[in-house]
Image (cartoon, rainbow, N blue to C red; front, side, top):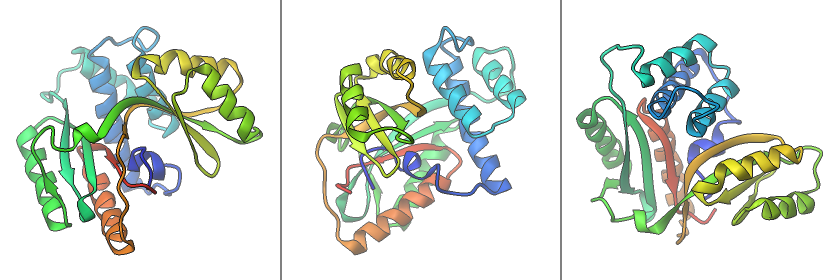
Length: 239
C-alpha cells in the first residue's frame, strides 16, 4: 500500500465483471454529478473534466456521463442530492484512514461505514483526529511506457511536482492542488501519457504494520472500496 488512494492502486489490476462495472459506473457518475455543480462545461470546469476523463477511461457510456452532468447542473431532477463527505478513521494497527464518499443520505452512509470498520478492526474517529496526518495534493499518474524513468522524474519536477513516487510501470506525481491543471497540461504537452489526475491526500506521517495487520488492512480496504458510496480511501502506511 502507498500514500495514494487504495482505489488508485488497484483500478488497473482488477478485471471488471458486469456487476463490478455497474458499481464503478455508479461511483463515477456520482463524482461527475458533484463536479458538475460548479459548471456543466468540462472546458470551463477543470474538476468536471477530470471526472469525465476518469469516466471515459473506465468506458462509462456517453449517455450516462451526460445524465450525470445534467443531474449536477440541475437540468435533470431525480430526487437525489449528492454531497461529498470525508470520514476519519483508524484501521488495524492504528493506521490512519481518510474515507472519501459521495452520498445522497449521510445518515445511512455514516452508519454503514461505521459498521464495516467496527467489524473489521477499525473505528470511526471525530473530525480532526487523523486528518492532520495528511495534506491535500493534486495527484497525477503518468505512464512510463517508452520513457526513461530518470528523465521522466526530471520533467515532472521541472513541471512543478513537489513529490514523485515510482510504481512498477508509472510515476505518481504530487503537486499543490491549485497547480494540478497547469502541471497536467505541461506534462501532456511534453508527450507524457496521463493515466489519471485527481485531487487527493498524501500522508505527512507514515506508520508501519506487521504482516498480520497489513493483511487485515488490505481486507478492510477491499470491503470499503466495494461500498457503493465510497469514492476513495487514503491511508498512511509506509508501503
